[in-house]
Image 1 (cartoon, rainbow, N blue to C red):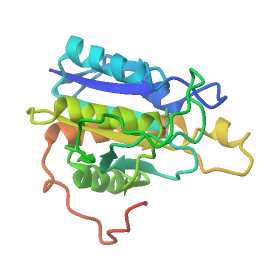
Image 2 (cartoon, helix red, strand yellow):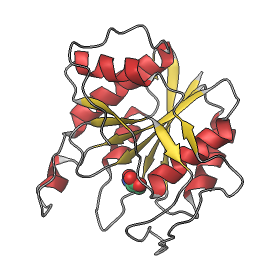
Image 3 (cartoon, rainbow, N blue to C red):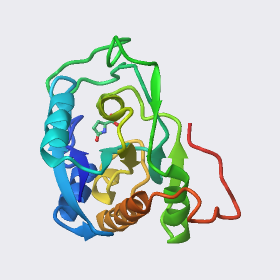
Image 4 (cartoon, protein in one colour):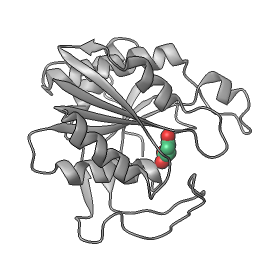
Length: 217
Ligand code: PCA
């Protein structure tokens, strides 16, 4: 059984993207009986959906988790909903900056994650990882990939979703204004646990922490 774990190439002038660093360091590992297959997606509106579709057809995973960097977020951010909207704030790696356009003209307005998001959030927090649920994956390439993923797998017996990770300390050290950060090994540990919970797949398995917390908006 395979789990597809995607990350993105660096974008926005950065030299590194923690989402791909996490994914590639877990490539080949067996977690809860499933083999992690990591793939790096281009940070381009034109290339990412195709690379995702190729990976899905080659790997035939049971579970898919797509990772991306959300600089400025302080915690592992488990996305709840993908919206059918592209509205790029910065150019992608091909210099494209589409605005106010749907991901797919013939698709619904939004899709929900099919991962056990609360069980994942609760397990992460219980293990000491800062983690929360998010109501927006933005309107850039990450949201596009999340939407494509949910659209392509809609109605199939597979679990899929998206997690944003914070900046690395070395990225935060150069950021003006300051952004929060999380070290790579902490990110890897957190995503490993998120994968294990996703594979176990039961929302009721992990009790909620006393402080439920508000979702990130
Ligand atoms: N983060 C961007 C795209 C690639 C990435 O890692 C985003 O949040 O849309």
